[in-house]
Image (tube, rainbow, N blue to C red; front, side, top):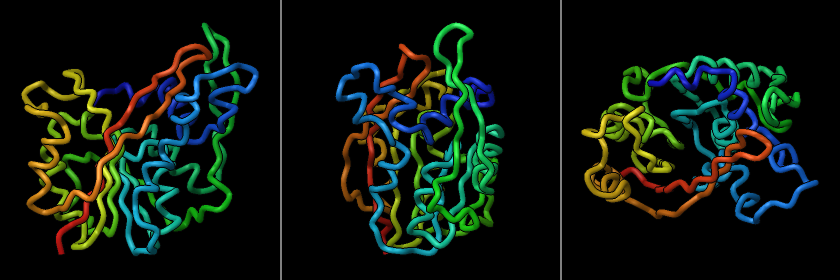
Length: 245
């Protein structure tokens, strides 16, 4: 896994991506295309693909700095977030404890603006825990979960098949799985020999249908601000699955 996700620059971008307000990401003194506004709150929107029933356990794989795990806790009695990045997990755990995090939003050159990330006021941090770990080598003792969420993770793994093979054991019978991926397969992260040979959706259907039913698929845009004038606007493929009883 790339050391990219341990840098202060990327940590700040992800804190803004997960916890920044609309005005902090797209300041209101400028006009922005409607598509950019619609791409905000991606870590919240992906968790909205789960049903609204209350369940016991949730797992957020590739949780980054934690916003999706926090959102999952609204309908789960307990949520575990796992990410390979030590910096991301430290940030998520700090926020879980209720401690605000100051970070710098880059404007241009060496000009920055200090901002603060906070745990959402209506989230109970005691229902969550965060662990540093490898999604391709998850501990056997994790057990099974009612809901598993993995956003923008698959195409950052060196061997994504290893996670797909493990998913049937991670999701309880009748449980829900939400996968989101921008399908940006890059040799920097995944050797080309491990890329899907057809489209990503077709690959997921082939790998998962023995244990899961595909309930629906859709697209969710997301926006990552790098500077005041440079943004990553991307569309993720979202697939929603139910584990066979």
